[in-house]
Image 1 (cartoon, one colour):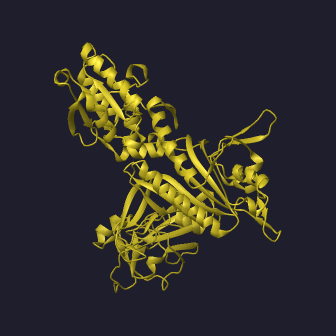
Image 2 (tube, one colour; image 1 turned 60 degrees about the vertical axis):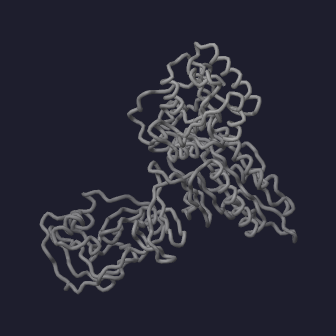
Image 3 (spheres, helix red, strand yellow; image 1 turned 90 degrees about the horizontal axis):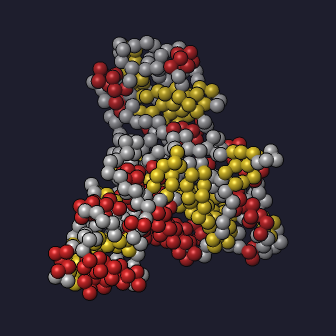
Length: 558
């Protein structure tokens, strides 16, 4: 295709509201434009990238026997009401009424609709297994859309669903999808991890996420380089470093105006790990005092698994419920529910004394207070792996895919049953598997860029080659460019020819910004010797070759 006929609105300046590298470069290189918060228009180059990603997705899905379908984006409420998610999902779901007053929603995922179809089409064990997939628009009313196409309100997703008669069948389909996902992400040129994850709103017993390391990621994972353990920090297990058991007597100590762990730690010259951090939260069932070690943080989702939905208490609520302002609260003598991290069982600590400007030194858990003991701390770098004792590291990542064992969570309420070999009615056993094509594109940019712009992996670049005739006023240059352009297309090479009448510097700058893997440069000086230059965008290495051999060289490189 010709640059002059494509919509490629490049920008010289980085938009001030774009923080993630992928967001900055997709705007600057003319791949996307923002319509509103969380709503993006994919311009021609971006759409070519997504189509290449989707082609890889389709090939790998069909290689494991998945069949492509297309489901509506608009769903009747009653299907979601049957599974209970109509009420369980909050403001993230777009809800509306049709002209007859019927409750409807815009699909944020398609478990219910796929199961609705299965309930009507699957009759016997002979119909199983089945795997159906689609590449479809989804809508989610994100509270804080950010990072460009990484967190949006409208997005495209490849979602597939497996239907089996047995748990063994589900396990087979689960592993088939895991293998396909590994191949997909490798083909897309991504570095990634498969990690244990929390099923969340999807439900089910087992789930894994596929994470691409990037500073722009909205998630964190814990990794053990020794045994390979990996998990989202939402459920990552870790053993905090051991502390020496002090022989402090139980005593109140004055800590004037010292409220935070760091303030009291510096004042008493005692390391933070010897403190109990006490956080008051308000759950649906009342106030709860959550306790972790002073060098640890509470993981909100881990705590939510124990006490349900909750929020931090406000300053006035802390004073009203506990009788002392935040900063001096502690577990000793409390009458409300206490939930403590398990690592606090060992050791002697310092905590708030429930008295203004005082703390207690020599607090012995179980002896001086008791609690419900759970793992509620967030795994930290330097913690020990629960499996092998190796040291954990924490890495920021972008979620690019997920797989879930749903079991019968959806098939039972939606009555997706089949008759087994004995004629008994049994619920279909399901799995759900998602990938975000735009997230793959953004992750690829996050992992492959330099100061000049994007460096696309060859498999998902919008074009294989960018042809750069540097002087469009020179008839000899134009003739060679047109001949090469035609020959490349005839050989199945996707080529973008920069046919604009622009200075060489502008063409080079735009070519580096767009990130097409190879550049074929036609300069008058080289052409006088019947040579062209082929430059690798990633390595910046360039070779010169005869014009007659250029297409052959390009085919071998691309």
